[in-house]
Amino acid sequence: MTVAYHYDEGKVLLYEDRGWTPYGPYGFDSGNAFYGTEGMMVFSRRGYFQVYMGRNREKGPGMRGDTGHPRHLFNFLDCVRSRKQTVAPAEVAHLSCGLVHLGEIAYRVGRVLNFDAASETIQGDAEANQRLTKQYRSPWGMPTTL
Image (cartoon, rainbow, N blue to C red; front, side):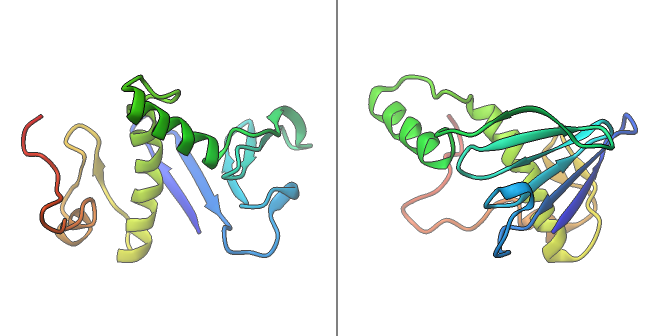
């Protein structure tokens, strides 16, 4: 899946995910890639990533280590127990995951979405807007007030 995010400032973010292929680009297992105007970044859910700069794809900053999904999960569970802040702020996770979720919604409804960041709603598309949340089973749900 490839998703193009167009921003008001005239910038475009391209996201590509090849999660179900038997191989990954540049030796990474999950095959996620972000392409920019000056380079690209390939990463996996295990926390490995590599940046490639310019047309010749010279290696830029990169890391291979134990910082991926399991470590984030353990940090989250430890913070639930201790009431301490997580390593990554919740807002960062919300914004990062939001991009992926919007791409998935656009794929499922089969059209371009116009997302309003201030209201966190999809403008003029009731079907797509419904996919921003889900119906919770009783007694679980989202609080109406904090």
